[in-house]
Image (cartoon, rainbow, N blue to C red; front, side, top):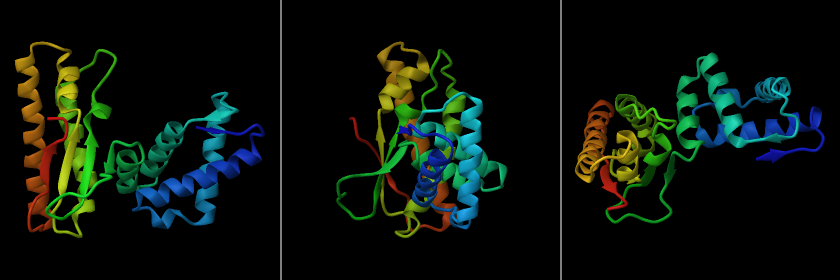
Length: 204
């Protein structure tokens, strides 16, 4: 959360700094990092926050969602997808080394489950494929030699099913992992990788 006791000009400066940092971190938006672009993003976000009556606290999530919309509106959809995946903590590099070389990235499936009583299974699988597409370039340099670590697979399956029998939850959890493997195999073929990243259930 960003808090500024003196909104307006001071807050725009803080927002510009935060926006620049986010765009640099997500990559794929280098052309937007010029000062004028960042300042324009900051002005637009500050105005949107003012209109919503948010004059003091600004959550990082609010900045990310605004940026995703703004990037999409100017045709920078790749950068928008990367920001949504990497900027929200949905995907992150592992803090430990993996035997066999290649980077390991962790995907937290709990962050993808649909809440508020709308466990739409089909939507989940569509989103899962889109997230893996957005993550793909992290394995480009190593030709696909790496690992996708999955967190909270069973928890996501249970949320999608709204609870239910353990057998059904285990079956859906297997389908989720199989979908990840199949999608990564397809991505490997499309991008000309030597191999596809291994898929590990980090909670099993």
